[in-house]
Length: 244
Figure 1 (cartoon, rainbow, N blue to C red):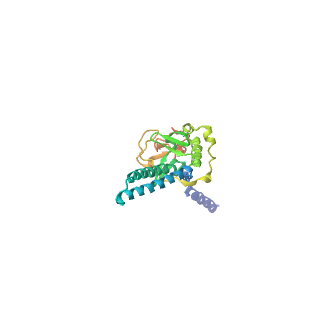
Figure 2 (figure 1 turned 90 degrees about the vertical axis):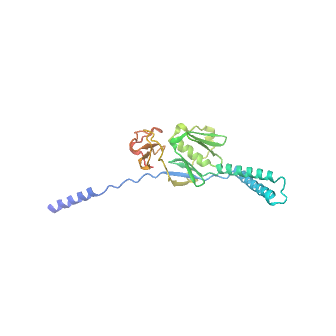
Figure 3 (figure 1 turned 120 degrees about the vertical axis):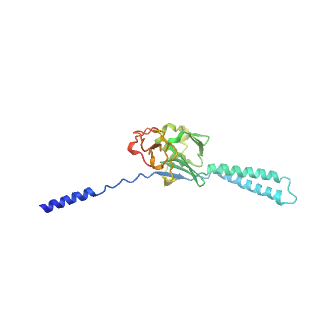
């Protein structure tokens, strides 16, 4: 009996000493969408090629040909203008777009520009462009180049921050249903919040580890001032707040 009692006590002690498994942090995900090639894209490509040819011919006629060709200067001006326009508008229509837990992100070369759901003030569709307005800036996404990205953006926006989505029914009817297979699923990385202010206390977030985020709209709070409900999307927050 004594040995059995001691064995039971050792078993209870082992269980007490065992560490409880820690919950894995929630993975923040986003969908990455590449632009579709449209007729406008092909037109811009043609303009860029013609501009480059005109620019090259103008340079040759002005500085290589002896004597210089009279109209070389006009070729240089027209070629430079065409090439610049093609590069500028081509970059706008060929920008990969990400949509997910961290909001919207635009890939501009090696730079990733993010806009949290909490920062968006208005979303609308006008003249085949989806316009997103924030307090600091605004940008447009061509519907023809990014139908799936825009469908995802509107779906997520309605779920997270419905008050800022102002899209007419006829514009919604022209969009496809959002499909998970249309984009590439990625884990959100490089989310920086240092330098922002706590929505609740207005306290400056000096260190990333002091920040807590609303999992629904990405609103930023200081770890000591996390409210019961998110001040932006009104969703229950409290212990649901996550680290960046």
